[in-house]
Length: 156
Image (cartoon, rainbow, N blue to C red; front, side, top):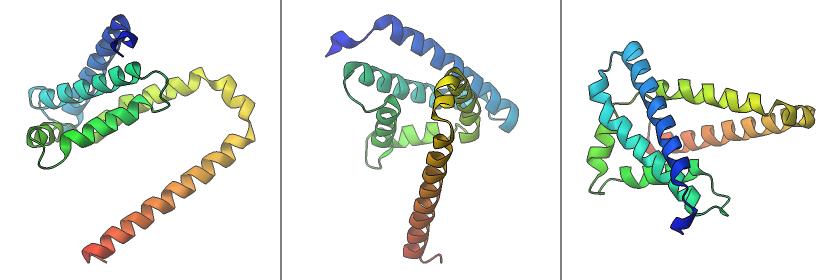
């Protein structure tokens, strides 16, 4: 199980995550005025959770479950009320602005898509149809869930 973990690869991933975390903290300081020292513990917790997700993905190489899915589950478990670490986790991670995270994330997504432009060309018009179906389905699903929750709470 642990034989699948590549220490050099994990170390490189950690270095990249630390650099991205520094970019996020600096961007958040510039845009929102949140002190880097205030947000640093939350960022380190997020990096630790992301590293755990990457290591889990390496431990189960035949799994089709992505590292992002592991990270989501780890974050969910850490933030569940009643969990001994949830108060600290939620308090520290709340110091990280979501929009500060999206800037480097979208930049890396753009680079990733740019590296696969030939594959996208092969899909031609089909990718547009698939995208429209996915976006429309997600929009209506989210709107329906929001409507149900607001109705249950008596807001609407």
